[in-house]
Amino acid sequence: MEVVALIKHDYFKFYDCIIEALSSFSQFKFIIAFILILAFIHITRRRANIYLVDFACFQPPEFHRVSIGAFIEHSALREKEFRTSEVNEFEKKVITRSGMGNETYSSVGMDIIPTDGSLKQAIGEVQHVLFTVVETLLKKHKISPKSIDILVTNCSINCPTPSLSAMVINKFGFRSNVRSFHLSGMGCSAGILAISLAKDLLKVHKNSLALVLSTETICSNVYLGKQKSMLLANCLFRMGGAGILLSNRKCDRAVAKYELEHIVRTHLGAKDDAYGCVFQKADDEGKVGVSLSRTVVHVAGEALKTNLTILGPLVLPYSEQIRFAFYFVWNKLRPWKKKQAPYVPNFKKAFDHFCIHAGGKAVIDAIKDRLSLSDRDVEASKMTLYRFGNTSSSSTWYSLCYLEAKKRVKKGDRVFQLCFGSGFKCNCAVWKCISKVVSKDVSNAWTDRINRYPVDVPEIIEH
Image (cartoon, rainbow, N blue to C red; front, side):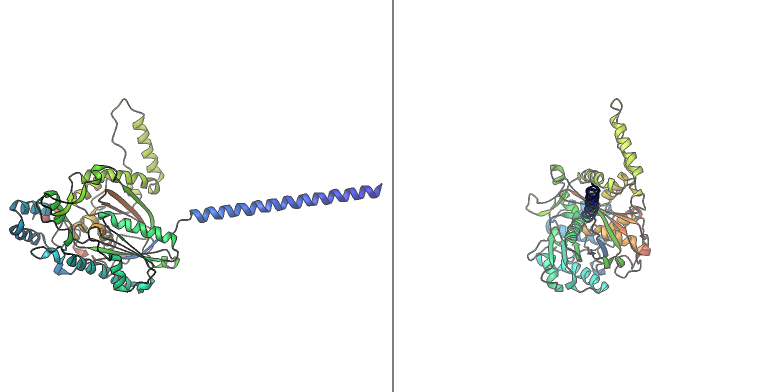
Protein backbone atom coordinates (compact mmCIF):
# COMPACT_ATOMS: atom_id res chain seq x y z
CA MET A 1 0.00 0.00 0.00
CA GLU A 2 2.86 2.37 0.75
CA VAL A 3 4.32 1.70 -2.69
CA VAL A 4 1.03 2.50 -4.38
CA ALA A 5 0.68 5.71 -2.37
CA LEU A 6 4.21 6.73 -3.35
CA ILE A 7 3.50 6.12 -7.00
CA LYS A 8 0.30 8.18 -6.82
CA HIS A 9 2.18 10.94 -5.02
CA ASP A 10 4.88 11.01 -7.69
CA TYR A 11 2.24 10.94 -10.43
CA PHE A 12 0.38 13.95 -9.08
CA LYS A 13 3.67 15.79 -8.53
CA PHE A 14 4.66 15.08 -12.13
CA TYR A 15 1.23 16.26 -13.30
CA ASP A 16 1.57 19.50 -11.33
CA CYS A 17 4.97 20.10 -12.91
CA ILE A 18 3.49 19.68 -16.39
CA ILE A 19 0.63 22.09 -15.59
CA GLU A 20 3.07 24.63 -14.19
CA ALA A 21 5.32 24.32 -17.24
CA LEU A 22 2.40 24.77 -19.61
CA SER A 23 1.19 27.74 -17.60
CA SER A 24 4.63 29.35 -17.74
CA PHE A 25 4.83 28.68 -21.48
CA SER A 26 1.41 30.31 -22.00
CA GLN A 27 2.52 33.37 -20.06
CA PHE A 28 5.69 33.49 -22.13
CA LYS A 29 3.68 33.29 -25.36
CA PHE A 30 1.37 36.03 -24.11
CA ILE A 31 4.32 38.30 -23.33
CA ILE A 32 5.87 37.66 -26.73
CA ALA A 33 2.56 38.30 -28.49
CA PHE A 34 2.05 41.52 -26.53
CA ILE A 35 5.53 42.75 -27.45
CA LEU A 36 4.94 41.94 -31.13
CA ILE A 37 1.63 43.83 -31.11
CA LEU A 38 3.28 46.88 -29.56
CA ALA A 39 6.11 46.71 -32.11
CA PHE A 40 3.60 46.46 -34.96
CA ILE A 41 1.65 49.47 -33.71
CA HIS A 42 4.87 51.47 -33.31
CA ILE A 43 6.08 50.63 -36.82
CA THR A 44 2.76 51.34 -38.52
CA ARG A 45 2.13 54.60 -36.67
CA ARG A 46 5.69 55.87 -36.76
CA ARG A 47 5.89 59.16 -38.64
CA ALA A 48 8.40 59.21 -41.45
CA ASN A 49 10.83 62.08 -40.91
CA ILE A 50 11.02 64.41 -43.90
CA TYR A 51 13.93 66.84 -43.79
CA LEU A 52 14.34 70.05 -45.74
CA VAL A 53 18.04 69.94 -46.42
CA ASP A 54 18.12 73.34 -48.12
CA PHE A 55 16.30 75.55 -50.60
CA ALA A 56 17.26 78.28 -53.05
CA CYS A 57 15.23 81.11 -54.54
CA PHE A 58 15.98 82.49 -57.97
CA GLN A 59 17.52 85.96 -57.95
CA PRO A 60 17.11 87.46 -61.44
CA PRO A 61 19.89 89.56 -62.98
CA GLU A 62 19.47 93.31 -62.73
CA PHE A 63 18.69 93.69 -66.41
CA HIS A 64 15.36 91.94 -65.70
CA ARG A 65 14.35 94.61 -63.19
CA VAL A 66 11.19 96.53 -64.06
CA SER A 67 10.26 99.60 -62.04
CA ILE A 68 6.73 100.92 -61.64
CA GLY A 69 7.54 103.72 -64.07
CA ALA A 70 8.91 101.30 -66.66
CA PHE A 71 5.80 99.11 -66.35
CA ILE A 72 3.49 102.09 -66.90
CA GLU A 73 5.59 103.27 -69.87
CA HIS A 74 5.49 99.83 -71.48
CA SER A 75 1.74 99.70 -70.95
CA ALA A 76 1.39 103.04 -72.71
CA LEU A 77 3.48 101.82 -75.65
CA ARG A 78 1.38 98.68 -75.97
CA GLU A 79 -1.69 100.92 -75.93
CA LYS A 80 -0.72 102.33 -79.33
CA GLU A 81 -0.83 98.84 -80.80
CA PHE A 82 -4.06 97.34 -79.49
CA ARG A 83 -5.26 99.13 -76.38
CA THR A 84 -6.94 102.27 -75.13
CA SER A 85 -5.90 104.94 -72.67
CA GLU A 86 -8.51 103.54 -70.28
CA VAL A 87 -6.57 100.27 -70.04
CA ASN A 88 -3.34 102.14 -69.37
CA GLU A 89 -4.96 104.21 -66.61
CA PHE A 90 -6.42 101.09 -65.00
CA GLU A 91 -3.05 99.28 -64.95
CA LYS A 92 -1.39 102.42 -63.60
CA LYS A 93 -3.93 102.57 -60.78
CA VAL A 94 -3.49 98.89 -59.92
CA ILE A 95 0.32 98.87 -59.96
CA THR A 96 0.62 101.98 -57.76
CA ARG A 97 -1.68 100.44 -55.15
CA SER A 98 -0.43 96.88 -55.38
CA GLY A 99 2.22 97.03 -52.67
CA MET A 100 4.96 96.35 -55.20
CA GLY A 101 8.10 98.46 -55.49
CA ASN A 102 10.69 99.29 -58.10
CA GLU A 103 12.81 96.15 -57.75
CA THR A 104 10.51 93.47 -59.16
CA TYR A 105 11.68 91.43 -62.14
CA SER A 106 10.06 90.66 -65.45
CA SER A 107 10.92 88.23 -68.23
CA VAL A 108 12.40 89.14 -71.58
CA GLY A 109 9.16 88.30 -73.34
CA MET A 110 7.27 90.95 -71.37
CA ASP A 111 9.99 93.60 -71.61
CA ILE A 112 9.99 93.85 -75.39
CA ILE A 113 7.41 95.71 -77.49
CA PRO A 114 5.26 94.07 -78.71
CA THR A 115 5.13 91.43 -76.00
CA ASP A 116 6.42 88.00 -77.01
CA GLY A 117 4.43 85.22 -75.35
CA SER A 118 5.64 82.49 -77.66
CA LEU A 119 6.51 78.98 -76.53
CA LYS A 120 10.17 79.67 -77.26
CA GLN A 121 10.23 82.64 -74.87
CA ALA A 122 8.34 80.69 -72.21
CA ILE A 123 10.76 77.76 -72.42
CA GLY A 124 13.72 80.16 -72.23
CA GLU A 125 12.27 81.79 -69.13
CA VAL A 126 11.64 78.55 -67.27
CA GLN A 127 15.08 77.20 -68.19
CA HIS A 128 16.75 80.33 -66.90
CA VAL A 129 14.93 80.07 -63.57
CA LEU A 130 14.99 76.33 -62.89
CA PHE A 131 18.47 75.59 -64.19
CA THR A 132 19.89 78.34 -61.99
CA VAL A 133 18.32 77.10 -58.73
CA VAL A 134 19.20 73.47 -59.47
CA GLU A 135 22.84 74.38 -60.13
CA THR A 136 22.90 76.43 -56.92
CA LEU A 137 21.63 73.57 -54.74
CA LEU A 138 23.72 70.81 -56.31
CA LYS A 139 26.91 72.86 -56.23
CA LYS A 140 26.39 74.11 -52.70
CA HIS A 141 25.88 70.64 -51.23
CA LYS A 142 28.19 68.85 -53.67
CA ILE A 143 25.43 66.51 -54.78
CA SER A 144 25.61 64.58 -58.02
CA PRO A 145 22.48 64.81 -60.19
CA LYS A 146 22.45 61.02 -60.22
CA SER A 147 21.88 61.05 -56.45
CA ILE A 148 18.41 62.54 -56.90
CA ASP A 149 15.76 59.84 -56.54
CA ILE A 150 12.58 61.95 -56.91
CA LEU A 151 11.96 65.05 -59.04
CA VAL A 152 8.78 67.13 -58.86
CA THR A 153 8.28 70.28 -60.93
CA ASN A 154 5.29 72.61 -61.03
CA CYS A 155 4.30 75.41 -63.40
CA SER A 156 0.65 76.22 -63.97
CA ILE A 157 0.47 77.94 -67.34
CA ASN A 158 3.42 76.50 -69.23
CA CYS A 159 2.97 72.75 -69.79
CA PRO A 160 5.11 71.77 -72.81
CA THR A 161 5.95 68.37 -74.26
CA PRO A 162 8.31 66.95 -73.08
CA SER A 163 7.50 68.16 -69.57
CA LEU A 164 9.55 70.57 -67.48
CA SER A 165 10.74 67.68 -65.31
CA ALA A 166 12.06 65.96 -68.45
CA MET A 167 13.78 69.21 -69.41
CA VAL A 168 15.65 69.26 -66.08
CA ILE A 169 16.54 65.56 -66.37
CA ASN A 170 17.96 66.12 -69.84
CA LYS A 171 19.99 69.16 -68.77
CA PHE A 172 21.62 67.63 -65.68
CA GLY A 173 21.72 63.96 -66.62
CA PHE A 174 19.58 62.42 -63.89
CA ARG A 175 19.37 58.64 -63.55
CA SER A 176 17.11 56.70 -65.89
CA ASN A 177 15.05 55.37 -62.95
CA VAL A 178 14.44 58.77 -61.33
CA ARG A 179 10.79 59.17 -60.33
CA SER A 180 9.71 62.38 -62.05
CA PHE A 181 6.42 64.30 -61.98
CA HIS A 182 5.15 67.61 -63.32
CA LEU A 183 2.15 69.49 -61.89
CA SER A 184 0.32 72.01 -64.06
CA GLY A 185 -2.80 74.14 -63.69
CA MET A 186 -2.54 74.16 -59.88
CA GLY A 187 -2.09 77.91 -59.51
CA CYS A 188 -0.18 79.66 -56.77
CA SER A 189 -0.76 76.84 -54.28
CA ALA A 190 1.20 74.34 -56.36
CA GLY A 191 4.37 74.85 -54.31
CA ILE A 192 2.88 73.16 -51.23
CA LEU A 193 1.15 70.57 -53.44
CA ALA A 194 4.53 69.60 -54.87
CA ILE A 195 5.96 69.29 -51.36
CA SER A 196 2.99 67.11 -50.40
CA LEU A 197 3.58 64.81 -53.37
CA ALA A 198 7.29 64.55 -52.57
CA LYS A 199 6.46 63.79 -48.94
CA ASP A 200 4.16 60.92 -49.90
CA LEU A 201 6.80 59.49 -52.22
CA LEU A 202 9.49 59.76 -49.54
CA LYS A 203 7.28 57.81 -47.15
CA VAL A 204 7.27 54.90 -49.58
CA HIS A 205 10.83 55.06 -50.94
CA LYS A 206 13.35 54.90 -48.10
CA ASN A 207 16.78 56.55 -48.10
CA SER A 208 15.89 58.91 -50.94
CA LEU A 209 16.54 62.49 -52.01
CA ALA A 210 13.74 64.56 -53.56
CA LEU A 211 14.11 67.77 -55.53
CA VAL A 212 11.08 70.05 -55.83
CA LEU A 213 11.10 72.92 -58.35
CA SER A 214 8.42 75.62 -58.31
CA THR A 215 8.05 78.42 -60.84
CA GLU A 216 5.65 80.21 -63.17
CA THR A 217 6.20 81.66 -66.63
CA ILE A 218 4.72 85.14 -66.96
CA CYS A 219 5.44 85.94 -70.61
CA SER A 220 3.10 83.14 -71.75
CA ASN A 221 0.39 84.48 -69.46
CA VAL A 222 0.36 88.14 -70.50
CA TYR A 223 -3.11 89.36 -71.41
CA LEU A 224 -3.41 91.72 -74.38
CA GLY A 225 -7.09 92.54 -74.15
CA LYS A 226 -9.21 95.14 -72.39
CA GLN A 227 -11.15 93.22 -69.70
CA LYS A 228 -10.16 94.65 -66.32
CA SER A 229 -10.50 91.45 -64.30
CA MET A 230 -7.95 89.85 -66.65
CA LEU A 231 -5.55 92.80 -66.63
CA LEU A 232 -4.80 92.30 -62.92
CA ALA A 233 -2.49 89.36 -63.62
CA ASN A 234 -0.29 91.56 -65.84
CA CYS A 235 0.22 93.96 -62.95
CA LEU A 236 0.82 91.48 -60.11
CA PHE A 237 2.78 88.50 -61.44
CA ARG A 238 6.57 88.64 -61.71
CA MET A 239 9.50 86.40 -62.54
CA GLY A 240 10.71 83.97 -59.85
CA GLY A 241 11.17 80.38 -58.76
CA ALA A 242 12.53 78.14 -56.03
CA GLY A 243 14.24 74.78 -55.62
CA ILE A 244 13.74 72.68 -52.48
CA LEU A 245 15.88 69.67 -51.53
CA LEU A 246 14.11 67.11 -49.33
CA SER A 247 15.39 63.90 -47.77
CA ASN A 248 14.23 61.05 -45.55
CA ARG A 249 17.75 59.79 -44.85
CA LYS A 250 18.77 59.85 -41.19
CA CYS A 251 22.27 60.95 -42.12
CA ASP A 252 20.87 64.19 -43.60
CA ARG A 253 19.32 65.33 -40.33
CA ALA A 254 22.69 66.73 -39.24
CA VAL A 255 22.85 69.08 -42.24
CA ALA A 256 19.13 69.76 -42.77
CA LYS A 257 17.57 73.11 -41.92
CA TYR A 258 14.00 72.07 -41.19
CA GLU A 259 11.82 69.06 -40.53
CA LEU A 260 8.33 68.81 -42.01
CA GLU A 261 5.67 68.45 -39.33
CA HIS A 262 2.32 68.92 -41.09
CA ILE A 263 0.74 69.57 -44.47
CA VAL A 264 -2.96 70.38 -44.71
CA ARG A 265 -4.71 70.77 -48.08
CA THR A 266 -8.15 72.26 -48.66
CA HIS A 267 -10.06 72.28 -51.95
CA LEU A 268 -13.33 74.17 -52.46
CA GLY A 269 -13.71 73.28 -56.13
CA ALA A 270 -17.16 71.77 -55.51
CA LYS A 271 -18.53 75.31 -55.07
CA ASP A 272 -19.10 77.24 -58.27
CA ASP A 273 -18.08 80.65 -56.89
CA ALA A 274 -14.81 79.23 -55.55
CA TYR A 275 -14.13 77.27 -58.75
CA GLY A 276 -14.52 80.33 -60.97
CA CYS A 277 -12.88 83.08 -58.93
CA VAL A 278 -9.47 82.49 -60.58
CA PHE A 279 -10.08 81.26 -64.11
CA GLN A 280 -8.14 81.15 -67.35
CA LYS A 281 -10.39 81.96 -70.30
CA ALA A 282 -10.75 83.89 -73.53
CA ASP A 283 -12.51 87.26 -73.63
CA ASP A 284 -15.07 88.34 -76.22
CA GLU A 285 -12.26 89.09 -78.70
CA GLY A 286 -10.69 85.66 -78.22
CA LYS A 287 -7.70 86.91 -76.21
CA VAL A 288 -6.66 84.52 -73.44
CA GLY A 289 -5.84 85.54 -69.89
CA VAL A 290 -6.47 84.73 -66.23
CA SER A 291 -9.49 86.43 -64.71
CA LEU A 292 -9.32 87.37 -61.02
CA SER A 293 -12.77 87.84 -59.53
CA ARG A 294 -13.57 90.42 -56.86
CA THR A 295 -14.74 87.58 -54.64
CA VAL A 296 -11.26 86.03 -54.45
CA VAL A 297 -10.52 87.54 -51.02
CA HIS A 298 -13.85 86.28 -49.63
CA VAL A 299 -13.28 82.81 -51.08
CA ALA A 300 -9.73 82.77 -49.71
CA GLY A 301 -11.12 83.56 -46.26
CA GLU A 302 -13.57 80.69 -46.47
CA ALA A 303 -10.85 78.30 -47.62
CA LEU A 304 -8.57 79.50 -44.84
CA LYS A 305 -11.26 78.84 -42.23
CA THR A 306 -11.72 75.28 -43.47
CA ASN A 307 -7.98 74.69 -43.58
CA LEU A 308 -7.29 76.00 -40.08
CA THR A 309 -10.17 73.96 -38.65
CA ILE A 310 -8.21 70.86 -39.64
CA LEU A 311 -4.79 72.25 -38.74
CA GLY A 312 -5.76 73.72 -35.35
CA PRO A 313 -6.02 70.47 -33.36
CA LEU A 314 -2.65 69.38 -34.73
CA VAL A 315 -0.65 72.44 -33.67
CA LEU A 316 -2.52 74.54 -31.11
CA PRO A 317 -1.84 74.13 -27.39
CA TYR A 318 -4.65 72.58 -25.35
CA SER A 319 -5.46 75.92 -23.71
CA GLU A 320 -6.42 77.42 -27.09
CA GLN A 321 -8.38 74.35 -28.13
CA ILE A 322 -10.38 74.37 -24.88
CA ARG A 323 -11.07 78.09 -25.23
CA PHE A 324 -12.28 77.60 -28.80
CA ALA A 325 -14.55 74.71 -27.72
CA PHE A 326 -15.96 76.78 -24.84
CA TYR A 327 -16.91 79.72 -27.08
CA PHE A 328 -18.38 77.36 -29.66
CA VAL A 329 -20.62 75.63 -27.08
CA TRP A 330 -21.49 78.92 -25.42
CA ASN A 331 -22.79 80.32 -28.71
CA LYS A 332 -24.84 77.19 -29.29
CA LEU A 333 -26.42 77.39 -25.83
CA ARG A 334 -27.58 81.00 -26.27
CA PRO A 335 -30.19 80.82 -29.04
CA TRP A 336 -32.18 83.62 -27.44
CA LYS A 337 -29.34 86.10 -27.89
CA LYS A 338 -27.49 87.33 -30.91
CA LYS A 339 -24.60 85.01 -31.66
CA GLN A 340 -21.13 86.41 -31.25
CA ALA A 341 -18.41 86.11 -33.84
CA PRO A 342 -16.63 82.76 -33.54
CA TYR A 343 -13.49 82.75 -31.46
CA VAL A 344 -10.33 82.77 -33.55
CA PRO A 345 -7.54 80.84 -31.82
CA ASN A 346 -4.23 82.57 -31.30
CA PHE A 347 -2.02 80.83 -33.84
CA LYS A 348 0.95 82.88 -32.67
CA LYS A 349 1.10 80.41 -29.77
CA ALA A 350 1.66 77.62 -32.30
CA PHE A 351 3.98 79.33 -34.81
CA ASP A 352 6.96 81.63 -34.51
CA HIS A 353 7.02 82.81 -38.13
CA PHE A 354 4.43 83.29 -40.87
CA CYS A 355 5.08 83.03 -44.60
CA ILE A 356 1.84 84.08 -46.30
CA HIS A 357 1.50 83.86 -50.06
CA ALA A 358 2.37 87.26 -51.53
CA GLY A 359 -0.59 87.26 -53.90
CA GLY A 360 -1.42 90.90 -53.28
CA LYS A 361 -1.64 93.51 -50.58
CA ALA A 362 -5.37 92.88 -50.04
CA VAL A 363 -4.84 89.15 -49.50
CA ILE A 364 -2.02 89.66 -46.98
CA ASP A 365 -4.01 92.29 -45.05
CA ALA A 366 -7.09 90.04 -44.98
CA ILE A 367 -5.09 87.13 -43.51
CA LYS A 368 -3.44 89.51 -41.05
CA ASP A 369 -6.81 90.72 -39.76
CA ARG A 370 -8.38 87.26 -39.62
CA LEU A 371 -5.51 85.74 -37.63
CA SER A 372 -4.88 88.89 -35.54
CA LEU A 373 -1.28 89.11 -36.68
CA SER A 374 1.07 92.04 -36.16
CA ASP A 375 2.91 94.06 -38.78
CA ARG A 376 6.07 92.15 -37.92
CA ASP A 377 4.32 88.81 -38.51
CA VAL A 378 3.44 89.74 -42.11
CA GLU A 379 6.60 91.73 -42.78
CA ALA A 380 8.29 88.92 -44.71
CA SER A 381 5.28 88.50 -47.00
CA LYS A 382 4.84 92.22 -47.64
CA MET A 383 8.52 92.72 -48.36
CA THR A 384 8.44 89.74 -50.73
CA LEU A 385 5.53 91.35 -52.57
CA TYR A 386 7.34 94.69 -52.61
CA ARG A 387 10.65 93.43 -53.99
CA PHE A 388 9.72 90.37 -56.08
CA GLY A 389 5.98 90.80 -56.70
CA ASN A 390 3.69 87.77 -56.92
CA THR A 391 6.00 84.95 -57.99
CA SER A 392 3.12 82.47 -57.71
CA SER A 393 3.98 79.08 -56.17
CA SER A 394 7.46 80.16 -55.00
CA SER A 395 6.43 83.29 -53.05
CA THR A 396 6.39 81.64 -49.60
CA TRP A 397 9.99 80.51 -50.13
CA TYR A 398 11.08 84.09 -50.80
CA SER A 399 9.40 85.01 -47.50
CA LEU A 400 11.32 82.29 -45.66
CA CYS A 401 14.51 83.53 -47.35
CA TYR A 402 13.76 86.98 -45.94
CA LEU A 403 13.35 85.62 -42.40
CA GLU A 404 16.63 83.73 -42.64
CA ALA A 405 18.49 86.78 -43.96
CA LYS A 406 17.08 88.80 -41.05
CA LYS A 407 18.46 86.16 -38.60
CA ARG A 408 15.01 85.62 -37.12
CA VAL A 409 14.73 81.85 -37.53
CA LYS A 410 16.21 80.04 -34.54
CA LYS A 411 16.59 76.37 -33.75
CA GLY A 412 13.29 75.01 -32.46
CA ASP A 413 11.14 77.67 -34.17
CA ARG A 414 8.09 76.63 -36.15
CA VAL A 415 7.41 78.20 -39.55
CA PHE A 416 3.93 78.38 -41.07
CA GLN A 417 3.66 78.54 -44.86
CA LEU A 418 0.24 79.44 -46.27
CA CYS A 419 -0.72 79.71 -49.92
CA PHE A 420 -3.83 80.01 -52.08
CA GLY A 421 -4.47 78.97 -55.64
CA SER A 422 -7.03 78.48 -58.37
CA GLY A 423 -9.51 75.70 -57.92
CA PHE A 424 -9.98 77.14 -55.25
CA LYS A 425 -7.29 75.77 -52.95
CA CYS A 426 -5.75 76.69 -49.61
CA ASN A 427 -2.67 74.71 -48.60
CA CYS A 428 -0.33 75.06 -45.65
CA ALA A 429 2.88 73.49 -44.38
CA VAL A 430 4.45 73.54 -40.92
CA TRP A 431 8.22 73.30 -40.61
CA LYS A 432 10.35 73.01 -37.48
CA CYS A 433 13.85 74.46 -37.56
CA ILE A 434 16.31 71.77 -36.43
CA SER A 435 19.63 73.53 -37.00
CA LYS A 436 21.33 76.88 -36.81
CA VAL A 437 20.40 78.77 -39.97
CA VAL A 438 23.32 80.56 -41.61
CA SER A 439 22.08 84.08 -42.36
CA LYS A 440 25.00 85.07 -44.63
CA ASP A 441 24.28 82.36 -47.15
CA VAL A 442 25.41 83.46 -50.61
CA SER A 443 22.54 81.52 -52.17
CA ASN A 444 19.98 83.60 -50.26
CA ALA A 445 18.09 85.90 -52.62
CA TRP A 446 18.02 88.69 -50.01
CA THR A 447 21.61 88.67 -48.74
CA ASP A 448 22.85 91.40 -51.09
CA ARG A 449 20.43 94.07 -49.82
CA ILE A 450 18.67 92.82 -46.69
CA ASN A 451 19.89 95.88 -44.78
CA ARG A 452 17.49 98.04 -46.85
CA TYR A 453 14.42 96.24 -45.50
CA PRO A 454 11.80 96.60 -44.18
CA VAL A 455 10.65 99.67 -46.08
CA ASP A 456 7.60 101.83 -45.52
CA VAL A 457 5.59 100.63 -48.50
CA PRO A 458 2.70 103.15 -48.33
CA GLU A 459 5.03 106.17 -48.33
CA ILE A 460 7.07 104.86 -51.26
CA ILE A 461 4.00 104.07 -53.32
CA GLU A 462 2.44 107.47 -52.70
CA HIS A 463 5.70 109.12 -53.66
